[in-house]
Image 1 (cartoon, helix red, strand yellow):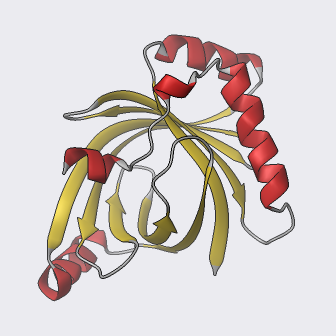
Image 2 (image 1 turned 60 degrees about the vertical axis):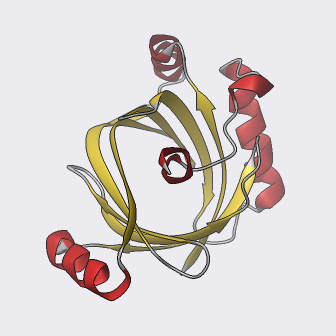
Length: 169
């Protein structure tokens, strides 16, 4: 099943300010997840295995590298045996890069927020407006992203066009 996702990633110099805003808007805090994302060599798109204390998923996605809200088509499968899956994928394709981060996870309705501390890269905030079943539509997702970009006062020079994996490479 494909999921439509409109997302932004930005440098975050004031994570406490973002936390305060999310709390003011009664965001549902899911917890802090230590995540290790292993990206594998694939001919197109990105294939990563996320191993965390909250989320463990195999994720394939395609997304253009551009600043501001960008669309992704995502295929996600829960990883019940992440260590075994990691070994299999490493043997089959080889590891491209590993991203290690501490991630705070929040939700407001269908919008997911991350406050990330990424090893080697620093602090970031992500906004992901998610349409899991095709009932929301891309236009509404883009409006939701823009609403939170404005609310968080994220400027154009803070926006990141590439994934953490690209930045580490």
